[in-house]
Structures are given as C-alpha cells and as structure tokens.
Amino acid sequence: MTAIIYKNLNRGDWSVAAPAGRDGLNRGKVIDHADSVTISAPVFVVKESGRLRVVSRHCREVHAWIVGTIVDAPPPGIGREITFNPYRAPTFHFRDTGAPVAAATHIEFTGDGRAMAYGAS
Image 1 (cartoon, rainbow, N blue to C red):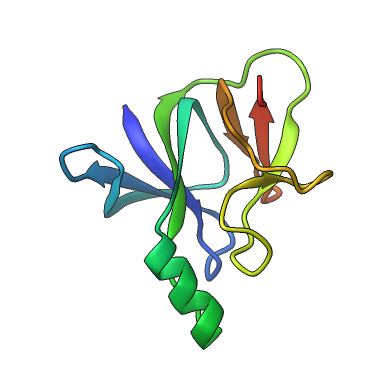
Image 2 (cartoon, rainbow, N blue to C red):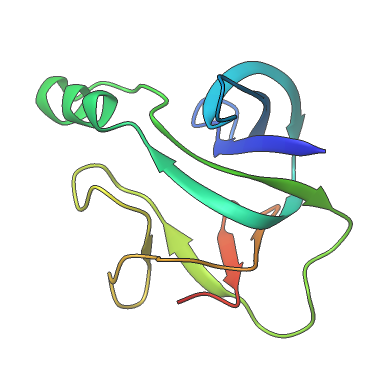
C-alpha cells in the first residue's frame, strides 16, 4: 500500500495519509497513526510555499512528507538518521552532516521519533 508519512508534532507519532493528486505526491486524508512504520522506494516531498509560510509566520503547517510503499520491516543493516527542519534547509537532510538526502531504498520511522534511511545517498 502506498502511503504518505509525516511526523505528527501534536501527537508525537507518525501520521499515515492516503496519497492524492494525479502524481500521488499530494497529501490526502489521514488514514492511520502509527508508533513505527517502514516504507520502500521513498519520495521526499517539500511544498515550498508551505515552508515559506512556516518560516515567515513561525507557525506549524504540514508541508513536508515522504511517500512510499509500506513494508513489514527495514532491510538488514544500519540506517542513517534523516530529518527535516524548515528553518535550516528546504530539503530533508542527514542529521549528522546536514547534507541533503538525494535518495534512499527504505525509510524506517521509529517509535522513538527518528527517521532512519537505508541505502541513502
């Protein structure tokens, strides 16, 4: 099942939404909340107009998410933590270096609130 995943800052868990739009990259209705979830073939989406509103108004607004296919478990190995902060960069980036995330094979959204990228570059 293809889904959109983003951090729910009010609840502290992950929101799972249905994809919408012709390309399937727009956020549809929230269909679930999860403590943890893993997706394959992730696509990183940041709506720049929403990011600019957040930066200028210092408000909360869902404007960044990751789209992918939900799978049972992450691949073997160690993932690399990624994050998104609209005040630091306009893209998802690696927490350790700040470099933008170009691609990954899987993303594991963990119960402790981290997003771990596997096969990332």
